[in-house]
Image 1: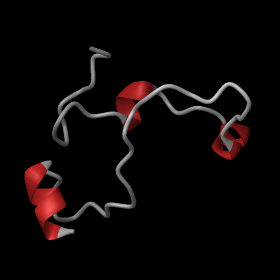
Image 2: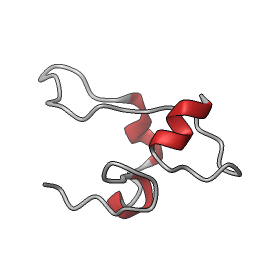
Image 3: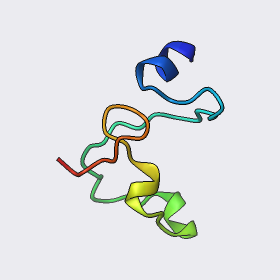
Length: 57
């Protein structure tokens, strides 16, 4: 876990709970997490390292 945090420049005081690879959704399934509502993209997605806002490209 320490290597992942270091490689992505995640601050030590942050608790890493997962890393998600982005891809294409399955046509026949929706994520159960959608029940709680979507969070703003800029609050959950980073580009390559912690703190670098993902720009969709």
